[in-house]
Image (cartoon, rainbow, N blue to C red):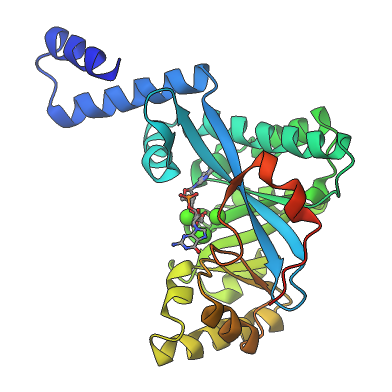
Length: 279
Ligand code: C2E
Ligand code: CA
Ligand code: CA
Ligand code: CA
């Protein structure tokens, strides 16, 4: 279907550059996929680094393409952000996350928190609090069950409106996480002013543990600063037992990564909820 569309476009709009054509095709495909409801959420557990208990889970978007199968968000989130479709897709993802929490609650499962990734465009749109409030209300989800993952760049756009919006989330009881920490240019003191709860250290730092000696020094500094600011520290991208042991020694609070669990479809989550990982 995609190549058909491509030919049609070439025929009617021969003046368009190749790049622009590809962009339009991608945008159209994404728009159609949203209409056809082809997006699903996978979930990856985040566990306590000491007790091995399930703390929360991250919702990660997947495109279930009728021909290509599961498509990675690394392919379609950038397109969604570039085209502005992220506003529509982002709202859909928030609603799907709340619907899933409601389904598990109705099934009598523990009311564990879930984090959702939020793009800067969603945050800067100004109506994210309304979108979230209405999704929470529709599915009767307590705000304490919802966490938002925001990147540093998302929050450094030092607009007063963003700070106010973040404050309104916190007032509701929604936890705020800093995603991919260490890849941007924010200082911890800037983040502290925004009163954020959790620091997710980027997986690039985890990957360097045991490889480069400086990485432990860096991690140690991030952990102690975050703790001084009463923030919880999560290491993402934990793939090996050796990394886990180093992180435990560095007093990292929580861990997430393939060593604990890959992101899995919703049906695979219930047995993991009550599980205690033995480290
Ligand atoms: P992210 O928010 O940093 O999510 C973590 C990514 O690391 C996920 O990739 C996850 O599958 C992967 N990961 C987890 N454990 C490991 C590990 O041990 N090793 C390695 N190498 N990787 C691991 P995924 O699911 O492909 O998502 C990629 C990115 O797409 C996310 O990065 C996030 O920026 C974006 N994304 C995903 N879902 C959404 C969404 O619903 N909304 C928005 N705005 N962005 C999303
Ligand atoms: Ca994330
Ligand atoms: Ca991340
Ligand atoms: Ca990211």
